[in-house]
Image: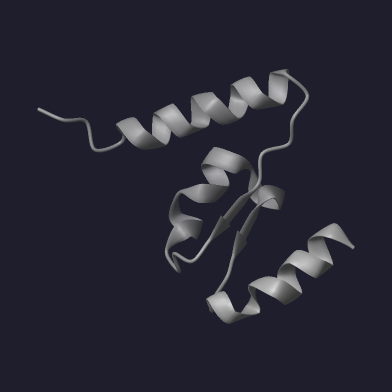
Length: 65
């Protein structure tokens, strides 16, 4: 039987490993339900839900500017 939370646990482990190596993982998602899981994986400040993919250029400019 497959564990339905396996991918979330695996992602959290990868994020923790990256943080220990000095990286700051960031989640950009189109999933409107991502708040239910992404903030637990990446941290509340490291998640952005993008409502429409057309807004990606503006978001990218804001994040990198």
